[in-house]
Length: 113
Image 1 (cartoon, rainbow, N blue to C red):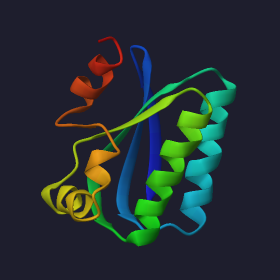
Image 2: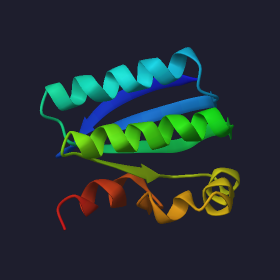
Image 3: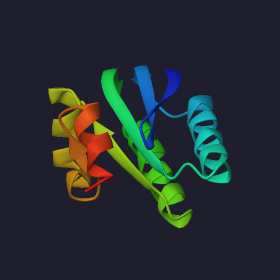
Image 4: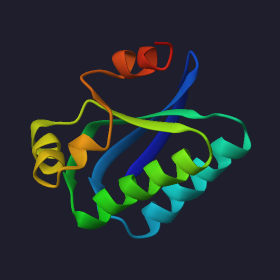
């Protein structure tokens, strides 16, 4: 899994690429979120467009990230989940926890609403 970040308006977009399977990348993701909170960047969008596969550890990484941001008075939203990933979120009922958007732009704009 590769992690790329960019700032878009009042949000930070974290683009995940490849297979999201926890492991060392989960720690890297967690460290990144703590860095964002420390820098006062509280609006995060995780772009899942380039995620090919996600296992339970990958889901755990997202849940942990959601909790980290919430505890830091921030928000983590999901965007561009593929059909495969979206069905995973539905099956696990995580779709009721995460705010999910069809596009990064919609997710970023939702912080202004």
